[in-house]
Length: 133
Image (tube, rainbow, N blue to C red):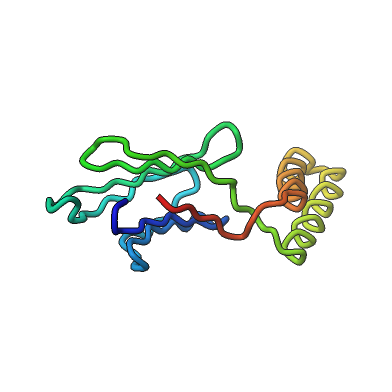
């Protein structure tokens, strides 16, 4: 955006940040999307900047940049769920344990949790994702 650099980051814990020229201007928690609003001098005028995040059906994060309520740019990022080998192995082990526990009396409770952890262990995405707007 001209001489300014806006960067959006998030991690699998739901921590989102908007960074303007290497300075965090907004930080929020969200797993499903939120709006980050701040002001910036743009073309000699103080403008309201909004960065909206959300999750799309294509397993990606949608990030939209608005200047004075006008959509300027849209970016798509991969979801960020544990990529390190130790994190993936931990998720796989937890998933298998819960799936085995689903064979007991509490099967309705443990099976969905086991499947979620097992799938998280199989995913191949980054610990933190970011995009420049």
